[in-house]
Image (cartoon, rainbow, N blue to C red; front, side, top):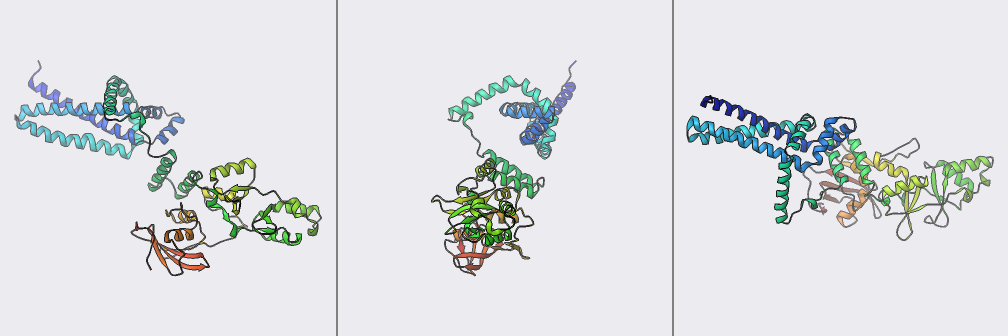
Length: 435
């Protein structure tokens, strides 16, 4: 016979079951939405069946959320209703107040905060644990969730909103960059790996002009010099390929390769005067300065050459770019036993940095883990001139982008040395002269 005591025991047991169900649904929702899709795809490729189920659930995200919310809300409502009924029997009308307070605390602490805290700290592990039961619950509740989706879609259309027109705010590249930056801050990805990945993503955004060696720093050979002098200059140079010019340095007529020169020197028995420089010079390859690094890298691979001269829209030589310059944008500076050591960056004990004006902003950002903008200027001196809107004099100081820039030296119209000090409280104002 079903007595009042039996009803109370049944109700309490049902409340506990409903709270456990609410615990399960709340944790599942948080874990699945916070899980790493990249990790799940990697696990699925390695044959993990649970990861494949997680990926399948994430592909039908609306139905998943609908089923989880439906189960969670039904569990909470049933538990609250049963608790209200029991407390009404025990305490009379004041039992409604007791039920409201008790269930609010229990549901928030036990069925919301606790499972979500566990899930958000171990999203991948929890997702794999609950994948199978959630998948069958989603299938079981599919008719109800599909009906709910139709109703929601109809209501949204009444307000002029369509689910199929929602677009991602971030591009795929930006999402990848953000994920890597987050993993770096959490300590799972080292700075060097983050920089390499960021450099790879930047190849489509950067142009050849951003990484080229400017013509004022190019090592070149005068084709009108004697063969003996040319051989001496090539052997003394730190570079394998050297542009040769005739008449003016801007008139590049070829590129001489040190190996070709040595082969020719061996062929003539070591007699430098018999070498015909024009005959062994390679035809110069000119590329536009607006070419993206990704396209230039493909062009280097297609032509099987590592060296190109950069020209502007008027055909004037601006500098040169090599395959090594592009690779360095990904892996950082590459030095070998023949590279000339240039001390362009000197950190100081007080946290400031003394830097040559010609140091590229990207190299400075990578070395110091800063985030100075490089959209309007390539070098640090160019950034100061752009922000200051003038060519400063030695001793002048400017503050922008959270750093203080002090001009140390200037040669004619070129800033040759600066002192950069990070500010504890970055200022948002544009460039302003502080002294």
